[in-house]
Amino acid sequence: MTPAERVQIPGSEREFTPEHERVRDVDADKLIDVTVYLRPQATLGWIDDAARRLPADRPSVTREELAQSYGARQEDIDAVIAFAREHGLEVTSTSAARRAVTLRGTVAAVGRAFGADYAGVYNDPKAGLYRARRGPLTVPADLGNVVTGVFGIDERPQAQPHLRRRLEPEAAQPVSYTPQQVAQAYNFPTSVNGAGETVGIIELGGGFSQADLNTYFDGSPPKVIAVAVDGGENSPGTDQNADGEVMLDVEVVGAVAPGATIVVYFAPNTDQGFIDAVSTAVHDTANRPSVVSISWGGPEDTWTQQARTELEQVMSEAAALSVTVTAAAGDNGSTDGVSDGKQHVDFPASAPHVLACGGTTLQVTNGRIVGETVWNELSTNHGATGGGVSVEFPTPSYQSTINPTNVDTRQTGRGVPDVSGDADPETGYEVLVDGQQQVIGGTSAVAPLWAGLTALLNEALEKPVGFLQPLIYASSAQGGLNDVTQGNNPAYQAGPGWDACTGLGSPNGIGLLEALGGTDA
Image (tube, rainbow, N blue to C red; front, side):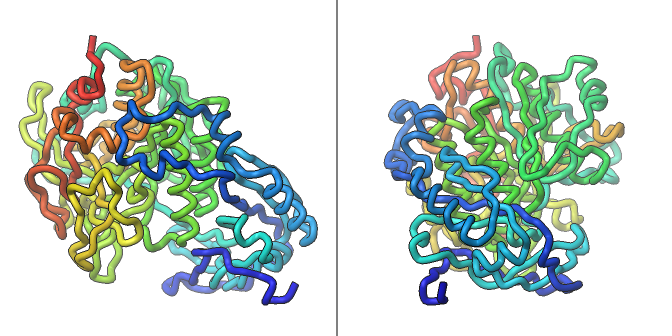
């Protein structure tokens, strides 16, 4: 093949992280696995206009039907298999439903196959050594319209967990709540417990301990299943911060929806691992989650365009399947922790088909909310809710009457978050991690909180609510949310209605159930 016969994979460009030290050359003989994503055989026409439709208007699509009608074409899969063999790569798996082909080969062979320019092995002070590439990836011209993304060549850490531990309480009498107390304050339905529902949780490290779950749930823990993706595994004790994320997610969901089955998808913290984990969960025909909770993410411009596009495509497939995907909006305020003086939103929370979850500071007395404001403790380095306006995704039609505007660019775009909930570590959640009682906050807690509520709604309605945004942005659903009007994050100010701090507000569970046509009886 000559260079003229190859084309770039759109959005595959990468640069090495300048603050990370280059350690050495890559190991050319190391075996690696890469995931090649393919175009769908047809477009999800109703999904393109999904934001204009209410749930009752949507067709019902099963995973099997989606795979048959919208999965990868067999001829496209065969073309990638032939390409792999030509370049000495082994095909280890194919999935028409996920539109994915997994290939294995040496670093050198994979690099030649996809035109990768390896920058070397770099050191992330927090995550250790990783293989990096720079520039675009390429494929033969006849695969140019077939391949939508290739992941796994670059293995730099992609995301971080959005949790905040309360280390030293600021108040003389610190406040904390059990997840059940938070659910009570938010008026979650009590006639259901999530029975018959499955909640998927995406994790990029750490693990859960069954002994901890048995203790936390007084000997009656929910059913929790671990699923390995791309070599990820349930490994408690290897990373205390990641363990905190896993246990927070599982314990919040298990506490508010104790009848639900929880499936935890463990994958490496790379763009490949992240996308493959979400894709596996959405298309899981064995466990069939109706809700997927994501508490990991990173500034949207730290992702390649191909990664953002692929993950949003998977989210739209979730919407077609009536699978609700919740994601944390971030814990570093409106900059999302980026120090360039500009405002940034977190991804995948900024994906239009994700229910983005921001954070509040919650005050409860005798089971009732007596105060709720935007979570913002940046002045004491205790974090603040993420939120803002995307520069990568345009305004979805469900936000067309709001017209979110970026304070830096003055351009409109996808506004983040959609909803919110208690996230302040100073009013955090009581959990058990690695045998230790801890109080943890962060928007990491809000994503599983909304996931647990969604499981309750699904059981009560006897059908999945799926893609929630078209409904909650409708005026008829405003009784299902507590508008939070005080505070900032800090570039955006809270106020009546939607804002880029807490979205439409925190949940009123029974009010939302009634807006969806159900009753708590």
